[in-house]
Length: 431
Ligand code: GLV
Ligand code: MN
Ligand code: MN
Image (cartoon, rainbow, N blue to C red; front, top):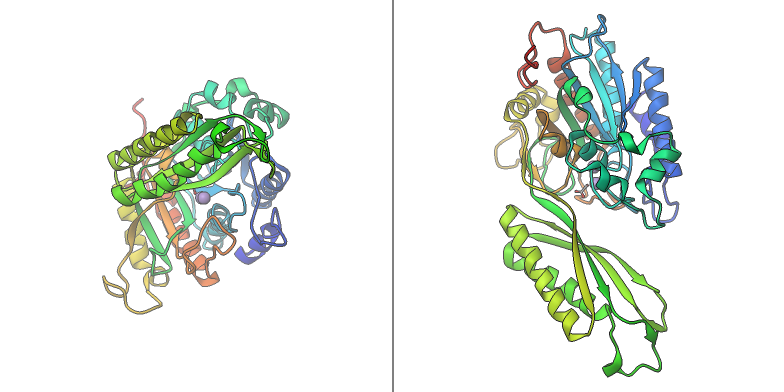
């Protein structure tokens, strides 16, 4: 199965024929179809399949002696945002299987296992918490909190797990599984216009979080309720959206209100409640925190003026992540040697031809969550449209193949037949 064949198999799954956007939410039929595809690809390669208690999927290629420690994990996620692109997540998984094929073609002997991961609910598009699978695995979210999460139809995460054969009482950190992994390298499409060569290396993920604002007013008739008698939650909501933009401009951060639920959502009814989600990101924690505090103040003020109440819940927050510098430098060296991956194809960028791009990102990733427990690093593949989380997200075929080549070399260096754990892997546990 070539990269192109795997890509073609995945392409129609969960794709809206009109917009071209993907709707692959965790444990819904399209995402389950993607999981079935994953299992199928793993079986074709005789990889050992493991589903952890948190619903994360792994496919292991074990060395000849079947040893399981110091594994080199790669992979990404299969779920999407609503109306997302084809590449965010699946590119890392297809590239991982393609890299395993190349390593086998090149008759590389493994000294350590290589694992391909498909982390569950990375986008948080169904249950609201981004990177839910890797957060649970690494202990970054309490199991009781995860069990209580509900999707927009009211289905509890715990019930969804049960329906799919998992025991919600067993979710949570898995030190045994983490203890078997030496490092994690996630390949991902770059999600802005920051990369001017086919492949680059991530340096950091900026702080980011999600906040839920609930406005409660009074439902009433659109034609008979005088303006002075209204308690319309849409008005403070409108203030929130504008305040978010203004606070971001003041603090050099990014804010987005991209999701809103209006109850009862009728043209001729004043809403009784509005729930709005704020995504906030920025170069530093204090800038993000100040941004959100100011937006909250503005929402409270507007709510008071309109006789509406407002409450705020932080759904998730991730502080700045600096990827493992040893692993990052190894990947950069790999890229420097891989001409294909390092040569700019456009006008010569600053840094000169062949220089390796090491760049931070504003997007969240499972590799960022796992960084608290393991050495992690990321490879980025150029995104010529600069668009992501939308149907126009794209990577050119040649850049994808350059990504596969870079990942293949990196996996060979990290998991190939060296005597000692390669630099970049965590030191083996004492005893
Ligand atoms: C995930 O892609 C995120 O950054 O929200
Ligand atoms: Mn994403
Ligand atoms: Mn992603």
